[in-house]
Amino acid sequence: MPTQYLTEANMRLTLAFLLGLTASLGFAAEKPNIVVIVSDDQGYNDLGVLGDHIITPNLDRLAREGVRLTNYYVAWPACTPSRGAWLTGRYPQRNGIYDMIRNEAPDYGYKYPPDQYAVTWERIGGMDTREVLLPRMLEEAGYYSGIFGKWDLGMHRRFLPLQRGWNEFYGFVNTGIDYYTHERYGVPSMYRDNEPTTEDKGTYCTDLFRREAVRFINENKDRPFFLYLPFNAPHGASNLDPVIRTGGAQAPEEWRKMYPELHAREGAQEGTRYGEPAKVANKALRQANYLGAVTAMDAAIGEVLELLDKYKLAHNTIVVFFSDNGGSGGADNAPLRGGKGQVFEGGIRVCCLARYPGRIPANSVSDEFVTSMELLPTLLNLADVKPPEGVILDGFDVMPVLAEGKPSPRKDMFWKRQGHEAARVDNWKWIRNPSGTFLFDLSKDIGEKTNLIDKMPEKAAEMEARFAAWLKTMDEAEPRGPFKDF
Image 1: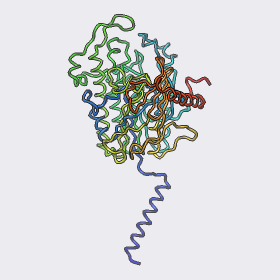
Image 2: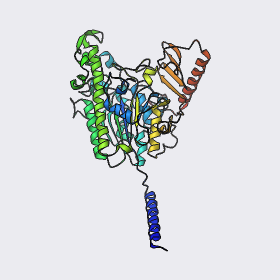
Image 3: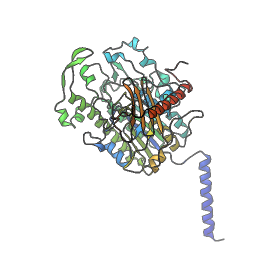
């Protein structure tokens, strides 16, 4: 037999042996890194690619290098349940966090003394510890996970990120803070891992979350990682001072100056707060703060993207960006109706971008009906991880939609925020809230301007029945705290 043949045969045998050894040792194909970036109360229209009213070059880059989703929904119109839903892949009514974990008294100017605050709902509430979150599922695939920014799923130790699967946490635990003091209405809120910290008090928090994300990538670039970067920008500042509170978000002057027409007019004016005369922010200051906060966040995102390029990780990293709910304050939700807190489109349909080079076509736009609950099963499939046995997920792997342009399997979605209820089935949208009942055809009326409730009572009844059937399923699900009686 020719020597060359023996050599080639030996090479094939050697290769087969090495492949078999690799499989036997549990090594798999290179797993993608995962970066999920969430903004807070950003408007549906607030991306530079959609208009020149806002400066977001790095988010625009994500849109050019990936896909922009125009028909992307979150599971609740405000922060806490929205975050819990995507991290579990389950409806808020199924995972138990279907309302906010926050105190209401500060809205009326009340500052809690420490002993009283310690027993308030904001301090003691949290996501049911039986719920399994994404980083815990990724552990079996060898992922190292870090979260830097807004947590909002409980402050007691058993609820904090390190007990839910993350390896590192630096950020705040409430629904909102002052961007500089890191306090929520005077209560310190920043943590490192499991311990409260005031080490960085006085530093703009967007810069802190950027710093931690950059450090995390530097230290973990040689292993699969999951970076969760939930900014608080451009959420309003949680400060009792009337000028700060009415000023919405907070942005350093260097970022407000990027909007010179607003910056030149910003300031305080006479008004009322907490029922008393007070100096309050004028409209120009509110708008400059909002836009500046988004642009500062965009710059931080740019550093993350540049670092992925530097280490040649971009090709093997999926990056997803979306807002936790509809915009508020200085946000632009056009052409949608309503905003944060509402189940009109402006409260639940949000801006979303996804980039995965070689898989998701660059500079693409998807109008397919998808939701944030698709994210967890998608990331698990990419990491070759199965969800825990017996856990019901309410989403699906969306990669065929994003990568191959296939139709979305999503046909319906339901929302309930106390007395605000909604159902979307195909392109029909049904809403019931304290002001009335509505029916819209989103294929012709994305702005929800024409209420068809009187013209199409049978369709409205069908939609109401679909909502009632969903709600019954949620009520019959295995009970989860903290709201259910069990």
